[in-house]
Length: 233
Image 1: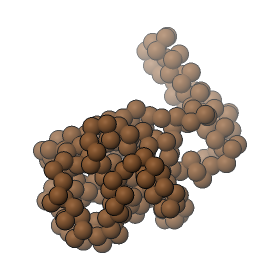
Image 2 (image 1 turned 60 degrees about the horizontal axis):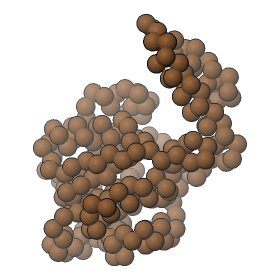
Image 3 (image 1 turned 60 degrees about the vertical axis):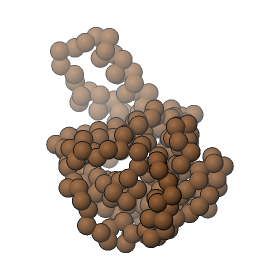
Image 4 (image 1 turned 180 degrees about the horizontal axis):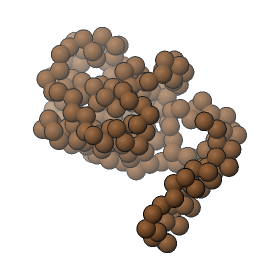
């Protein structure tokens, strides 16, 4: 596997390759990432996986500092999967140039978790747009786990008429029914079980709503049930 660290080497690489499938990650690779990579490899052997912990999408310095990082383990996983190219840039490689495309932040960014993470999606779109301009991939593989992020990236690509095609991949869950996530490495066994209870509760409530089709959904009641499980804020 070739590890590309600088943009000058990236340019040389691009001159040799006609079509690229791109899987962006922040490292801390897990089975969710592996499923994205496997899907990418089915369509194109020239798969580029990036590892870059983007500081601009973190609203908390502590969250950025504690984000799981294990480069040696990640490289081992990528080699085992048969990935040919790893793009492992530094901050200046990503943010030292002026972009052609203007960031398009759809109003959907202010809803759901975006209400509580005001700069998060702007930071995500900033770095994804830069990756797309640097790599010009034919395909971009993203997980449905990050539903809001997926929609906003699609909106940005559509607005700027970027030719990259987004391939949405299904969510992969662990033994606790939790979607695989790098941050889950920071959870202990009891915290994973607690998170699993929340998922099962929400799934039950969703099915109940589908079945009963109420005119108004009592979200406060659902919130109380979540707190009763033992979730603290």
